[in-house]
Amino acid sequence: MRLSRLLLSVIAGAIFLAARKSRAYKRLRVRMRLLLLVGTIALLCSAHAQTPPLSASPALEQRVADLEAYINNSPRGADTKSATASNIAGPGPSYNAWMMTCAALVLFMTLPGLALFYGGLVRAKNVLSVLAQCLGIAGLVTIVWWVVGYSLVFSRGSPFIGGLKFAFLHGVDARPNSDYSYWASQDVFAMYQLMFAIIAPALIIGAVAERVKFAAVLVFVGVWMFAVYFPIAHMVWGIDGWMNGVWNANSRITAIDFAGGTVVHMSSGWSALVLCILLGTGSDSGKKSWLPTAWSFVWSERVCSGSGGMVLTPAARLRQMESPRTPL
Amino acid sequence: MTTTLATAVASFTWAMLEYMLRGKPSVLGFCSGAVAGLVVITPACGYIAATGAVIIGIAAGILPFFACTKLKSWLGYDDALETFGIHAVGGTLGAFLTGIFATASVNPNLSLSTGAPLNPATQNGLARIVGHTLWIEQLKAIVVTIVVAVVGTAVIGALVRGAIGLRIPPEIERQGLDINQHGEEGYITS
Image (cartoon, rainbow over all chains, first blue to last red; front, side, top):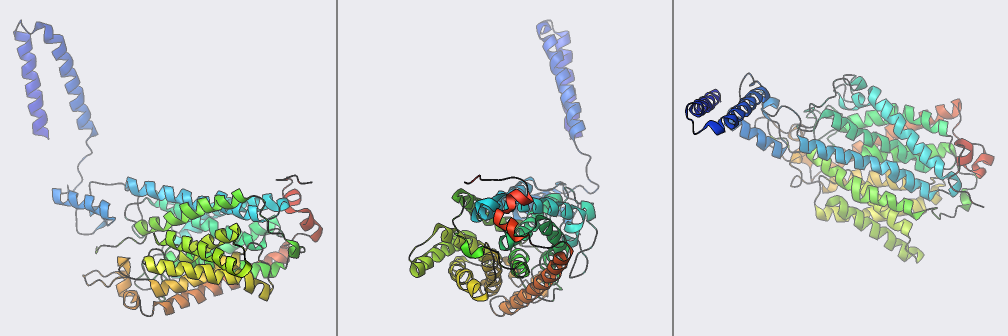
C-alpha cells in the first residue's frame, strides 16, 4: 500500500516537472496542478480513512472465512478463541435490518392488531377501554423491560431467573451478544424480545374485557411480569435456562419452544383462565350478541398478525436464535 | 412455510366445523381459526416439516374450537374473548405436538453432532430423544408453565382484588367502560 502510494507520487511529480519544462505543455500546467492537488487530497483522505490494522492482521483465508460466517450466521474470527480478530468489527447490517423489521411486525400484533381485534369484539361502549388497556400495557412493560426485565430474562443467572447484568439495559449496545446471536446487535435483539413481553400480558385482556378496572390491569400486569413472564421466559429462552433444551447443555428439562408456545401463549392463556374466574361472570354476559363492532378491526389483526408478525417472527428466530451453531 | 400452512389449515378447519355443526361458517370462525393455528404452530414452527404443520393446523382447528364452544359453557367461566380457549388450550396443544413432530432434518440444532465441541442438544440428551420421547419433556415443560402461571396469577389476582379491587361496579359495567374509566366515547350510539 505504501509502495503504491509512493509510486503514484513519483509519477505525479514527474508529470508535473515535465509540464514545467516543456513549452508545449504550458496550457496544461494549470490543469496539471489542479490534478496534482486533487491527487494529493485523495491520497491524504485515503490514508486518513484507512483504519489502523488490527494487532493480528487477518490473512486472506481468515477474511474469506469471516464473509462465510456472515452468510452462514456462524461465529466470525473475533468470536472464536483460536483465530485472529475479524476485519468485520460491528454487527451484520442485514441481520439487524431483518430483526428490526420483525420487531416492528411483532409489535403490530399488539398495536394495533390485538387492540383492534379485541376492541372489535367487544360492544361499542367498551371499545376504547380495550385500546387503553393494550396501550397501557405496552408502555408499562417497555419501562419494566428497560429497568430490569431484559436482564432477568436474558442475562446469565440461575436456571430459573437471570441476573442483573443488563439492568437499565446497561451494556446492551450495537455489539452482538453471542449467547443469542452472532451478528444481530444486542440492542436490536432486546427490542425484538420486548415485543413478545408486550403481547403476552396484552392477551390476558381478552378474558377480562368489559368488566375490569383499568388500574387493576396495570397493577396486575406489573407484578405478573416479574412473577410469571420473566421466570418462564428465562427458563425457556435464557442461555442457562432450566427448560432450554436447544441452547443449554445442562438443562434439566430438555424441552423446545421455538417462538413462545409456553412463554407467551400458555402463560397468558392459563393466567387468563384464573383471572376471569377470580373476576367472575360479567353481569350481562348472557345477552352478548357477539356482533363485532367493526370487522375491519378483526381484519387488521388478521393482516398484522396473520400475514405479518407471526409468520415472519419464527423466521427471525430461525436466523437469530436457533441458527445452526457451527462448532466453535 | 410451516406457519402459513398451519394458519390456513386451522382457519379453514374451524370454519368448516362451524359449517357442519351450526350450519353457517362465520367470519369470526375463520379469524379465530387463523389465530388458533398461529398459536398452536408457535412452539413448533422452526422444528417441523410441512406435513407436520398441516396436521398441527387440523388439530388447531378442532381442539380450541371445542374448548371455546363446549368447554366454556360446561365449566361456566366467562372468558369474554376466548383467551383461554385459544391461547391456553392451543398453546398447550402446540407444546405437546412439537414433541411429536419435531425433527432434526429441519433444524440442525436438534441433530447429534460428533465433532469435538458438541451441540448443546447433544450434550444434554435432547438430540437423542427427538422423534422418540421428546413429548415427555414437553409435558414436563407444560406442567411447569401451567403451575407457574396458575399459582402466580391466583396469588397476584387475589392480592390486587384485596388491595384495589379487580372489578368495576355493575352499573358502570352496564354503562360501559369507555365513558367511566377513560372519560371518552368511541361510538356515540343512540
